[in-house]
Amino acid sequence: MKKLSGKIALVTGAGQGVGQGIALSLAKEGALVAVAGRTLAKCVATCEQIQEVGGKAVAIAMDVKDPESLSCGVDRIVSELGGLNILVNNAQEIALGTLNKITDEAFEAGWQSGPLATLRLMRLCYPHLKGDGVIINLASTAAKRWDMSGYGPYAAVKEAIRSLSRAAACEWGPDNIRCNVVLPHAKSPSLEWWMNNNPDEAEAFVKAIPMRRVGECESDIGRVVASLCSDDMRYINGQSIAVDGGQAFMG
Image (cartoon, rainbow, N blue to C red; front, side, top):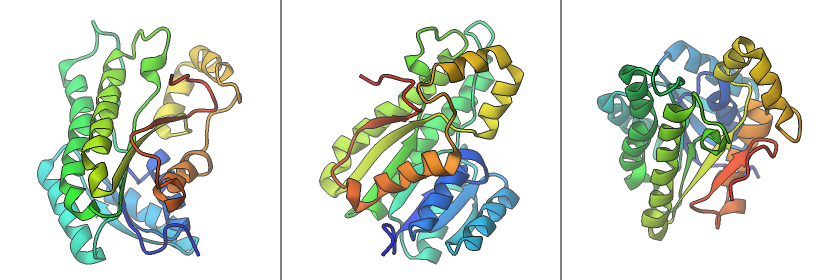
């Protein structure tokens, strides 16, 4: 029997990259996945990939910066799919830049799509997750860089997600809702763009990873998330787990 059979999962930003890899991994373990994202066509393409491997999925148009879109999306999932057991907050607009150059608009977009959207979705999903729910939020090891030049705004919103996740684990643990954070290095479109546009820094970045490679969205990141959502990990709660080939020390 597959580890997530009978579970219903919502994955945001699942039209590409890490979100897509997570959606595929959850589906392969038997979950019915609501593939959510701003671009419906990308979500449909992910659903088609899931169906090709024998999984089940539905595409949901969802803008994580729009509270009404979030609410309508969760209502539709619960109504049409029959409930919700797993929430994966993956969608995030990335705000990179030095403190003197980052615009208020870029930082605000990172805040709205990151910690604010995460908080809103966790609260919307809370009533449906009570009893056997799992939340996985995506963060970053950017705040662990010895030199954070250019990464302050991005690290700030990601660290806020970690704080909200720890609070959720503590406050909702008695409701049998677990909340953990995954901090990945993966071949997402955004990381590939950064590596292509910053080749020297990218080379040093890869050399700083003990395993000397960047992770695969599905086989390296998605499988970890699927495992964390299963009963095999039922006593893991409130933790931030770097899935980065050993680069960051979280202690």
